[in-house]
Amino acid sequence: MGKYNYFIATCIMILFSITTSYAQDKEAKITLTFKKADSLYVCKALVTSEGKPVIEVPVNLSVKRLFSNLPIGDAVATDSTGVATFEVPQDIPSRNGKLTIFANIVDDENYMNTEASGEVNWGTVVVSDNSNVGERSISGGRSEAPIYFIISSLLAIGLVWGTLLYAVLQVFKIKRLGTVNKN
Image (cartoon, rainbow, N blue to C red; front, side, top):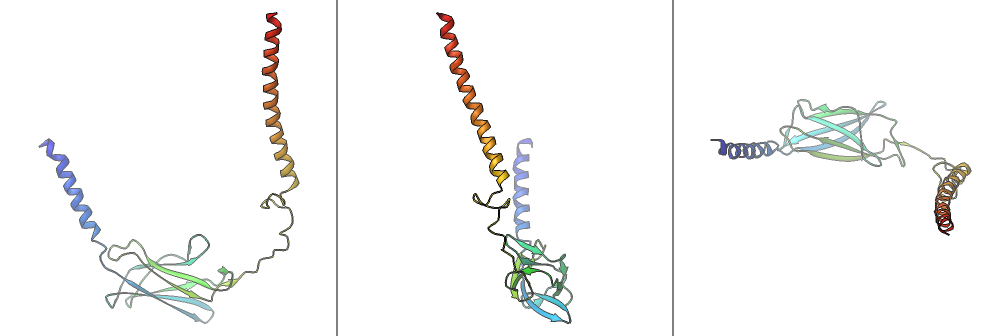
């Protein structure tokens, strides 16, 4: 019986992986609608599957940023009509006032991962002041680096090369003293 334990455990693991891989077999569709109600920005995500509204599925809302998506609040579960309602903050910065908003279902037991996006003009336009671009700063390039950075880096490089030069001179001095003592 001992030699069959590995075979039985392997079969059980294979059967378990097959059954769990088909757990998320339903496909959901998300439709986004945007509305400005009074002074609030409201985003509604309608989740349907096979033409019917999906109930009690957590939906996450996020905004596209430079490197990844910025989550807006916590996940909201859909109601009896399949709608998850989100209040979007009014102070999200953007370059041209447009925001790309994503709604997604992630890691649900019954439905596959689904994502929908939409673009809306709800961003706060940020104007950047570039008047100090030519000045020396820590984030500046080679020609705009602060003077103390240049001096400290040259001093460190000089000390390293000075130490190496001193070590080489000491080796030649030892060699010369060795030849003088032999005579």
